[in-house]
Each structure stands twice: as C-alpha cells, then as structure tokens.
Length: 459
Image (cartoon, rainbow, N blue to C red; front, side):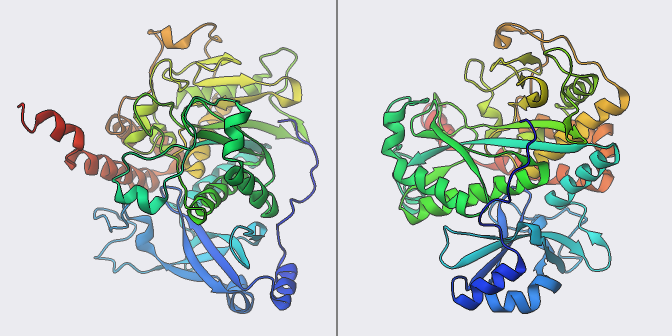
C-alpha cells in the first residue's frame, strides 16, 4: 500500500460534466444515497435536471426513522434520536459532490453519496459516515492521512434473488461445484458476471485490482484499489450495491453473509490500514516490524478490539464465522504474514500495513474503520506497546484472548465500555448499543428450523 500519485478514476463526475451529459441525453437520473446502520444504501432517485437545479446545492430530506429501523424497515422503539413521540421528522441529505459518479450498471444514471445533517445543527452524530469523518478529523489533528482497503468476499448462486426467497433460501445452486481458490477454470465459468462487475466498477470511478475464486463453493472475491479511508468506505458500499444489482439483472443472487452455511468458508472483509505523513508512511521503520507509530497503533487496535466487536461483526450470523481452522480468526493476536492471526502484518517499508481479518463481509465499513482508527489512535496517544508477534498456528494457542462467541456478549462489552463512551460519546454509544441489542433480541425471540427439527417430535 505504498502511496503513489494516481490519476482521478474514470467515471467520477463534476457538476459541469454531469450537466453536459444531461444535456446530451446520456444521463437522466441521479441517485442520492446514504448508508444506514447495516451499511445498506438508502435514498432517492431524482430527475437529473431537477437534481442540478435544486438538489446539488440545497440537498433533500429523508425521514429520520431510517436510523432507527431494523432489517425489515420496522421502526424500533427506545431510541432518543427519533421516535413516535418525537414525530419522526426529517434530516437533511447533503450531497458530497466529491462522490458524484456515473453508475454505469444502471441505465443513464449517476450516483452521489450524501451526509446527514440536522437543520442548523451540523452532521447527524449517529450516522455511520459522520462517525468515520470524525475519526478522519482526529487523525488529521495528529498529522496523519489514513490509507485503507477492504477485501470483500461473497457467494454467488445461479438461483435468482426472487427464487431464493421463495425457496426459503434453501437448496440454492452455487455458481461452482468444487473448491476454487485461485482456480481459473471455475472462475471462467462465472466471468460473465464477475467481468461485468469489474468493468462497471471501473467505469463508475472505482478502480479494480483483481478478482479470484475463494475457498467455498461459488465463493469469490473482488478487490478494488486502496484509497483514503473515507473514500474507501464509500467504494466498499458502492461496489457491494453494484454487485447485488448486477446479479439481480442477470437472474443470479449473491450473499455477503459472514457464514452462509455449515461446512463452508465464511466470507470476510479484511481491512488494510496504514498512516501517512507528508507523503511518507508513518508505519515504515528500519526493521520488518515497522516504526514506533506502527507498534503503538497496532497495540491500540488489538487492545480495544473486544470492546468494538459489534462494529466489526454486527449480526448474529457474524459470530458463526469464527471457527478454528476455517480461515477466519478466532484469537486476538498479531503475526507477520500469518493467516491464522486476527491481525496480519504484511508488506515492507513504505508498503507496510496492518490487515485486520476480524470483520466479516456483513460489516458496515464506516463503523469498522471508525473502530479501527479510534482504537489505533488511542494506542498512539498512550504509546501502547503491542504483545510480541506470535509465530505458529494461532488456532492452537488456547491461552490467547478469543473474540466473543455471540452478538449478545459483544453488545454487552460495547455498551459497558468506558473507552467507547470516551471516543464516540455517550449519545452514540447508547444509540448503537440499542441497535445491536435489538438485533440480538430479535434473534432470541425467533423460533428456527433447527429447533423444530430437533424438538418437534422427540422432546
């Protein structure tokens, strides 16, 4: 991840270029979107001429209940931010015009990401993009630029989304029928889909590095080029949206569940981070293990990982990915180029970086990067020393601290953490603790097929 000057990605648009394309009839729709707590993109589609006349300068409005809903879009009681008692008013969607781009996978469409604001009150503090922007600001106060990448894995099925839902998500046909990790023949069989994704991302301002088969049946990975951390989080949610919409257009389906099925590899979202100052890596040192800043940042990231677990693993399903010997990390340790570690250090010199292997593909990248930066910057401020680098099979190291077993356990640690309260504020901590607790309670109340099959007759 050495820093190099790179040209502006193709597909990004200025307002002037957008106006020219609208005038020429090449674009007639602008999607204004923002990420919710799950990392899903919500928003509106605008007539492109109206967007240029009204929305690009003044923004638009959305109901504030969108930051208090569950997965089914049901309003959840108990939030201070928005409620029936408060009338579920509006917040303001303010386009970040640096994210304006062609959405080439959609017909005659552009897309822009928005920040959320309260009228005359600035950014909505509990919005995911606001949280990451605050950590970027704090990094800049210490003189650091943050470069990041996220590697997103997924499962592809030849069953369509509608058919999958009708089948109860059982009996789906995977796009591959044997383990295809790096296997080019199997990859060729889905190149119609994967190649389309690569090309559309490239033409939509998201540079792609590569795609490859992964360890599960029909499992793949597409890697996009690293960027400054906020831009990388934006790229992450956009390429996830692009992949779902292209799959839908082709009659396929794709899932980013952390653990789709027993016996199959989980899907991860490995996070790569490095700090830079005046064009030079602040992590680079004279030895293979980096500078003092590198060690302090790594120590802080590890030290606060348990408190921030819901930001890395936000769903009930997330914790089923953490199995020994499954390529997913289970213990909080670091090592040099060791895929059994929760924190894998890779690269040398200017390319030295930390790869955190804890987040699954279900993570919200804004929250995951927020947790990483808040933790690492605390390590720098307090000059924390990391534990010694582990060598060998970390799965076998039973003495090392383990990631939590359930979302319920992780939520309790998050809700009770003085550090989370200090770096995010009590309002944000309370808001997200309620969000994750509500997700856990929905699971606790649900009766599953597993229970019926096990207990219906024989109990």
